[in-house]
Length: 137
Image (cartoon, rainbow, N blue to C red; front, side, top):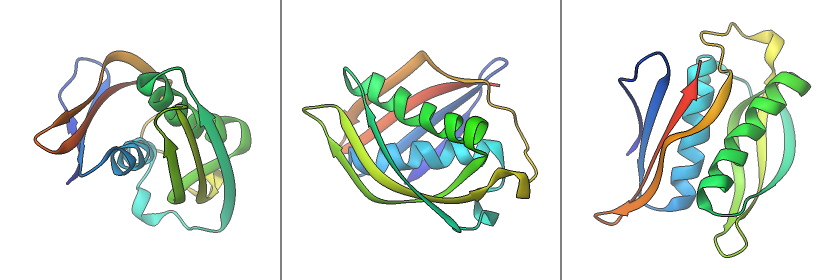
């Protein structure tokens, strides 16, 4: 399973297929990281704890992904791993630890301006969690 990049005019669309919603959210974050730089080369030198909430699953996904853009832009941090991931589907809350490195140590391949709600989907299909979202680049 995992993620794949879909054709989209002017932006980048991503589809994630995973066994459960937790893995789907994690794969969504890794797809975002892969768009920005080669995720496989990022060291796990820095640890950060994050807590993200939303009003529903779509806003939770949006806020979760937006947190990584904030960490990149404001803190100079780029994601390599997500550990101790917990999602509360009733309270629409994510708590996890993220590992990564200083972004200045890496060459960026794309400038992601924003996460969008455009064409965002979170659904269960054939016992899999499927997420689709578009990045404004």
